[in-house]
Image (cartoon, rainbow, N blue to C red; front, side, top):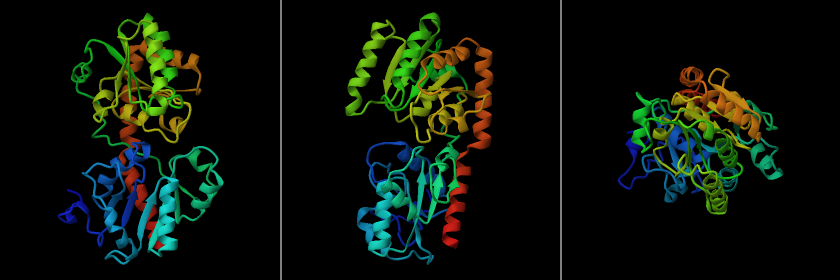
Length: 360
């Protein structure tokens, strides 16, 4: 039980007199922001009175309920202003309304993962934050205000290698005797799912011991895109070797079944999937988007040109054809993530930002 949860009342709502940090999540749709909050808050709550707010979050997190919003107009028992840590425009706007219209004693912190020029509206909101965090050096370059780079970490307990990969494959219903290359995330053009499919259609016929897994779902506007990919796979005669396994809440088990992971995105804000794969002892081939070039070192995988099918095929083949290179890269990936990207480091860096905000 976390520090904040231990003070929850019988309704399941936290004791707002104790809560000093709010992590809003004002979109119900599952996204990278949601995943970040779900991973971070339980660790933050060990030493910090923090609560989440909004839909689409699991019940094990300490939650502020909608009817508790008026409590934000009062300071917590500590006497210092609460921190409202936004990660989207809508959450920055909500924080501004609370602070500047309703005069709530809040300090506003914003984390930006975007690697593109911000709109005028976004710039307007960002300029009114008390502190701004960038998730990578690339992201920081697009910000026009002072900021602190705090890269995401990974839960190395939840994402870890199996004792035996054959057993891990069997556990998720796969053939334990085969090797699997995976691509996980939303199925859509932006995520490069079609590039992965085309690469696998090119490499699998000559490598009968390998199969491919696509884990994730297509939202309503991308269902036709997924159907086109399935049709292409069937036409290539590979429907039994390029598997669409859907969306899973137990995704760490699927990482543990892999021998290689491919992140083929055409655009990404930060992108946690390479870290999740490497924490599972899996080498990574990643497109040069998001923070991938800052996440994947040369001894743990390869960063290739974005939207370049030819180099993706070559990079994937280089690992699939050389088991010793694959094994060495997987070991290096695991050691690298555990040393440089533990979730606790991200939590400590965020706490340092909060401390500076309170000291202002």
